[in-house]
Length: 250
Image (tube, rainbow, N blue to C red; front, top):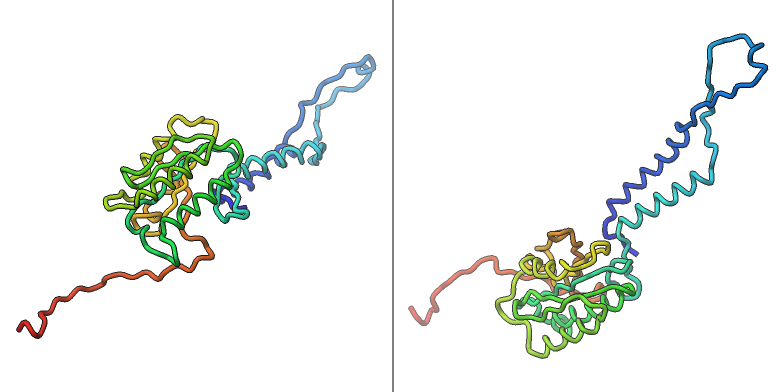
């Protein structure tokens, strides 16, 4: 299990608040009058208080509830079996699939897009029961599916898209396709987490272009197209270009 917002674990520092409340909290004294009080000599009232915890079970319950709230806010995700991080509670999601030409790069016997398809299948299998998932690609002419409770709709749409010979030239960068993915979540239940799973390569126009959260508060979870056990190809780049006439043309 991993945490999608581990920084919120700092909220566990607040576990000291109930302890302070128990130590400082006290009930105001209640005066009780009885007949023999008229024989007592009047004196200044003084109140003493024991600075000890009187109700340990109540304190433990409060600490556990506070710790549970902090853990829920950190968005625990499951990576069991599939190796793909997903939010561990029912949620509304959209898969944003990279459809750029860089996904044609072949790694092993398959293209990057075919590797991405496998990652999407693992992601769909890992979604908690009750989740709804849709699909959009960075290809403006690619498939678009509204979130539904049937993950097979997404898998079938990707399969048809690949059969058409995608990807093609002219695809957006993932960050440019993010508003389209966010729009599919506008009708989502406000009480449920909203997540965009971006599946692609780690290039500047791919996963490297995405923010941690989309407009409207939807969480963006990057999912590399290549599994951890797949050897990644070395990056190459053109650093300099020179032109010289061929000797036979002089």
